[in-house]
Image (cartoon, rainbow, N blue to C red; front, side, top):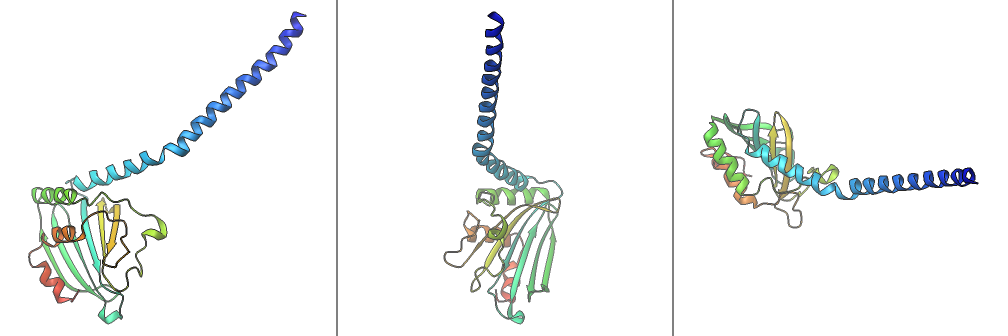
Length: 200
């Protein structure tokens, strides 16, 4: 009789153990699926801010601006790139980026540090980068200007944010565009004259 009870209890105990393990696995899986998203997003923001504030070689920031979508001959754009050792502005005509003017100056770590901390105070890294088609600016804001900002580390874009001057098309940038664009152009003497020369 004792053997009969033992033989019935052991399978029931095994079934209960398997059920407990299955429930624990499902709870763990649910935590990963439903609660890991926010921490990943936070880590991305923290990583981009760290990359922005790092002043060692290989780090840089860029602002690219393009005007309205018009005929190739009338299309204008420009780019400002700042790193710990150089400052550069280039103006372009046409969709193939034919260079109109280029001005390149040296830089130093102390100046770059003040600049990137000013960008941080202006919330450059605050926005959440869009993904896939939502991050594609081709044809966006056809009648206005599109501003793109990149935080770069070792020639790789850590974060790409953009906005436009068109009403209702805000993009991913969560900062005041005038403040950021002024910070970039103020890094290069007479930058606004070069921009005015391409009528953007």
